Length: 296
Image 1 (cartoon, helix red, strand yellow):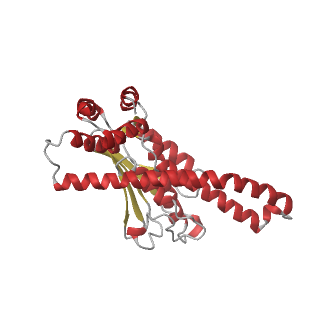
Image 2: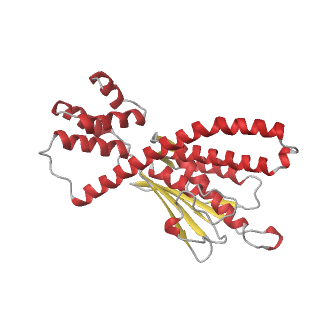
Image 3: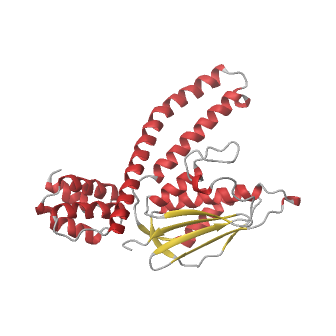
């Protein structure tokens, strides 16, 4: 990478380009890069890029104080998450690229060859494959490097709830503060939130109730000095299974589901150095997502 390209990418507004430059420096940094790395580190807001820049700086400044055991463990965990996400994004992209044209061709042939195609098992199988490709596409998006910006979290949540709960027999209460401005990747936050809300709605609708009167779902949100958070609390059927494995790709207890929703929600938060938790209660589940304030 030439000095000109390196400088441009380190100063890019696209975190993918900054991450590419930081990874180059991890492998190829020389003493003359120290000032440039320090300058980039001073303004960087994305955790993965910061960790790569810190590793590059340690390489060219071996006299710097060594990281503590806790810091080294944290960097190792972040680096492992980064490698996993890169592999996930690349693999999903390759699978989608190969499957989509084959699936399109199969559907065209089946529509011509299968009698009463729309009502056939063939159509249902192809619809399930379409759903799988769509889920892989969302998972790929969740694994991408975040683009941090300011957003009105309360307005986003109101819009996402209206879109997702429209026509459903479940009422979603919104209890967070108004004018709540946070930093984060709007698309990744939406991915995580929508998957959490869908699970809450499904768990609530699974209750056996009279006259289809279901308990309300409550969405709350807020921000602290170090992070932003959203919580979705339902009083549905609760979580069945191992909570520790709930976020594994393909893990589901619901018939007909692909088991990608919680994995996508978790990956979206991981991409922002955040986290997702499922907290079972006496009735229902609390789905909680958190992500750090930029620079925190």
